[in-house]
Length: 65
Image (tube, rainbow, N blue to C red):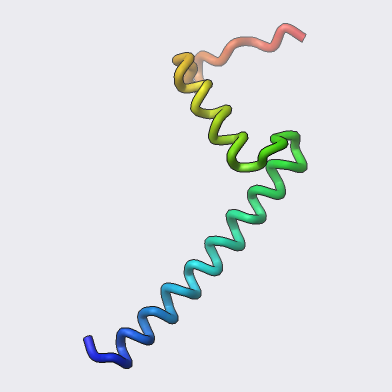
């Protein structure tokens, strides 16, 4: 690749990075709105705990409320 091609590739990758950052920020805001205080970080921690406890989508504990 020559310099111009590399610059074009960098510009393309920067654009994709901007789009992904925007999406993650939006998802983080949505998660906070529905009660995950830490946003995506809280969702990841919650999912990790669910997995550690061995739950799957077919064997989640029933809501006792």
